[in-house]
Length: 318
Image (tube, rainbow, N blue to C red; front, side):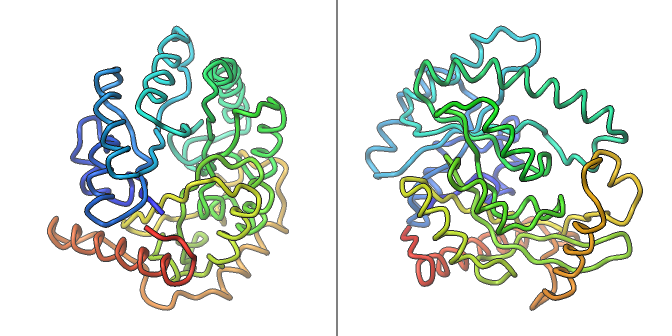
């Protein structure tokens, strides 16, 4: 098991462009004895890549790069350059998102979402021939945007061996998907994994959703890991233990439902029942009111507890 940059949010948000670069993440992986780094690049140059690869090889780590889809109106050569640099750095896969936010927060109408989806398809259609040319797997993250069936249809639409999924093991709970169903449906298309456990709690407009140390939440982590391993034995698992205040999932508000034209009360009832049946074992993590020193200490503690659980119970050596 390695790390995503969001496991070290304190470092990430203080980094240039708020991107935790993959070489710095490798240093953290070495410090914790972890297996790899799933991080970004602010210096998209071959000189930087030639710095990353020897470090990767020296420590026997895997490298996966977080990058961006081709921007609308941008010369596709910009994206292709990032792919080439990533390959030179020794990356085994790339990760992108379609939406830099949460669907239920960013859009007010179904028409707005439909327009955004049209743009996503243009971006993906531009990216696919480039990653195919360079034989670089590209995983689109389950990032609080596509429901599981939408993401499955998206992946199948392009029918490319180099376009798949970055499978976040907790995000789609916010879209009222059953998270085990998400894993089972998307595991065969998975190129990279954001591994996390989740805890939930009711509030007046819906429910709160928090990442918690592995093994301390409600998810069946053993089943999740085994399902992914069976479908994709070669995939890397990158811990994404985000230490933050709980996210509000306002699924009892009218605005939340504006873009979910194909969903009904069954999804809501199922999810609220799940929330009520899985009361948190301890108070959900919160960082409001903590000093930077206290927050960094809590973040590190969450990572260390997750590592211990992964080794002891998931067969994920670091």
